Picture (cartoon, one colour):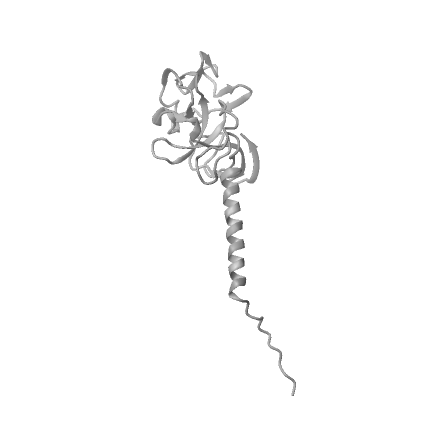
Length: 207
């Protein structure tokens, strides 16, 4: 009589699965460390940065730009490049800890004024006061002033180590004009590019 073969795979010992779990956990840990130390992404929650960023945009965030951090903490191992005026950055709101994305409009030592949504830095207006564009050095930024300019800011000097953040949609942005200055060390990372936009799928728009 011909014997039938057992088609069921042999049972693996329990220590085989323990090894699989350990390898999976290690991969997940490495991915978490990579995201916390090198690069991450951020989903834009509102229209406060329009027209530069639209709600739902996915933005690539460079975690190394302003220094190396101990993974999964806010402790810096090195300081990296100073935060530059005009950069778009991710940071935690000093008001409620919510992670926000805004533009750095003034850094420590700057004398800043805001009038009708337009910026003056160290006595120099970044636009002609009528148009919707501002020059941060070589970086040209288009503003949305359809809802007005938001609150004005009387001339003030930003203390060293502090930053003033504002949205490009000046009349629709809960920013530093409401919650105050942000310590430079609280910057989580620099937004470098939009890589996904609703209705367009994959894009690459440098910031």
